[in-house]
Amino acid sequence: MTRVLLIEDDPAVRRGVSLGLRHRGHETLLVATGEDGLAELIASAPEIVLLDLMLPGMSGLETCRRIRAFSQVPIVILSARDDDVDVVVGLEAGADDYVIKPASSEVIEARMRAVLRRTTQPAAPGQARTTHGDLLIDRIALRVLKHGAQLALAPTELKLLLFLSAAPEQTFSRQQLLEQVWEHSFHGDYRLVDACVMRLRGKIEDDPRDPRYIQTVRGFGYRFGPL
Image 1 (cartoon, helix red, strand yellow):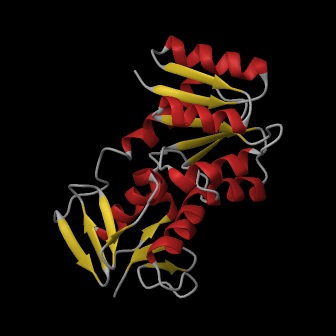
Image 2 (cartoon, rainbow, N blue to C red):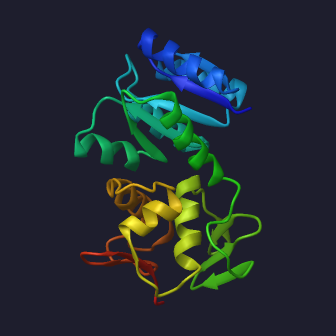
C-alpha cells in the first residue's frame, strides 16, 4: 500500500481520484490547498504527492517549489492545463511527471508506480561507484556527490543520470530516454526529458549553459560526456 498525498481543490476530482486509488489499495491523504499540503507532507510523510496546478492561495507551482526546497518526495502534477509553457514550468519547478486531466485512475496509478520505481531501482547496470570529473556516482547507495558533497536529486533526475552515465559517450534519443527513465512506451512527450535535463544540469554542471556532463546531440537527444 502506498501513502499518497493528493493536493486538489476541486471536490469532485479529489473524490474521484481518491476512490480510484483506494480501490487499488492505496492510502490517500486529501487536502485542498498548497499550505495544507505542505503541513500534511511534514506530518504524514507520504510516499508520493499528486499535485494540482490551479490551487487557491499558494499556486501548485509554488507548492512544488517549496516541497523541493526540503524534500525529494516524488511529485506528479495533475492538471487540465496542457499548454507547453505550463507543462515545462511545472516540470522545471521540480515535478517528476505531468498527467493531463481528466485521466483515469489506471493511468494515474501507472504513472505513480513508474515514478516510485525510480526511487528504489538503479536505472542501468554499471560499476557500483564511478568517478566522472568532480562527480562520484554511487549506484548502491543511489546518491551522487560533487566535490564530496551529496546532491539533492529528485528521483527522476537521479535515474536519468544513472542511465546516461552507465554508457558514457553513447547518444540516446529523447524517445529512448522517455521509455527507459519514465517508462512511457508510447510516442511520448519530450518536454519531460528536456525539462529534467535542464534541472539536472543546474545541479551537476559548473556552467549549465556550457554543460560538461549532459551534452545535447542536436536534433536527436543526449549523451553523457566525454569528459
